[in-house]
Image (cartoon, rainbow, N blue to C red; front, side, top):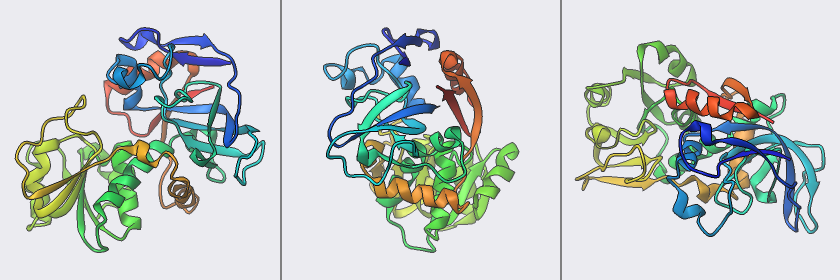
Length: 320
């Protein structure tokens, strides 16, 4: 099978097309013929070697990035409990440090609990755009466990995780104040934000103008870190989509009056019910599937360069 991986860490050009054996399917497993794999910031971190300690001793090169797949059930292992059948269109969240390896491959074998039906009427690319970012936002809101009617702020609301955080907060009947650049205001408004404030310097003051006492929580999809703490009321919470110390983050420093919730999406790798609930919301039109651009798999390096350049609205997808 064709796959895309790295033997040596570095810039996008280290990604190369490789030929690997089709993986065998075992008990409790399903093999998926992958037609679409989304490109995530975590893929960049793997390519750069930032998660090398997690890979060491677990997998052998080439290391494959990729956390989202859209495809078709190709084989079902013995003693597998699932209502899926060969030929069904599916989507799944993949954890590249697991024995499955990452999603950048024509075939992948996963635990059956990782796989659900793709939303009806969607393309493979659209299905692949949902799992990891949707589950990240879902986990963030589950950890915050806010009551209906409370105010929550979402940073990076025009991005993939931020966009789902806005939409899912509204399905949870929360009130949402979200940041956006002027060019993204219409997009963020369409996602359901109750109030929009201009992103950038002074954003916390603008959030406080909307909610003078401070919001009950922030989903910090923009990795603002300490910069957004003043927007939170005493006793409030912040959900970090990357833990402190990871690339791109800044230490929160003093935060005695704010509870930190670290969002580690692999905790939901087997949360079949959570992923399937996202499918239902997508079918109902309550969350959006945004595909920004598609690339042939052999242009994975170009897709990574596009992601790292910033400003992507929606998901970049590799076609397999």
